[in-house]
Image (tube, rainbow, N blue to C red; front, top):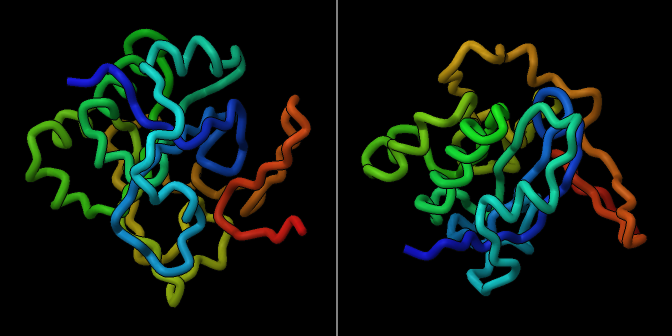
Length: 187
């Protein structure tokens, strides 16, 4: 079992990827190929940034973070790494966990490691992005077919109405990044 997770990128603090201030972790690799995906750069299975869960938290976790949001790519295509990340978030840092997946909940339940991951998730948002069902509310999901599963009592659906659909982040490196549930043309 590899001790590393292939990560596309990490946003240390976001307010549009789930309740409160959250660290957002984008896994690298996805084969769902949803038309008009928000994160097409995460689809390739090339090695981008290899981290252990401990390295992710040591390098990126800020004190004022309520939880982590895991997206992609497809996090469940690296289920052992996802499991270690979620378990570390819960036990080492007492962080809440929100995970987005293109798989459906019933598909995940069929796999032993994926089922273990579900034990450490507060909220799962499942389903592939469908442009024809694009969400036109401030609810933190891309399209109306995506469902919320609340595995703990830490959140309710009302907690997933965000202050905006997207946010622009200017990093210390001067690089401008966009995150959320809308494509913004920065050119």
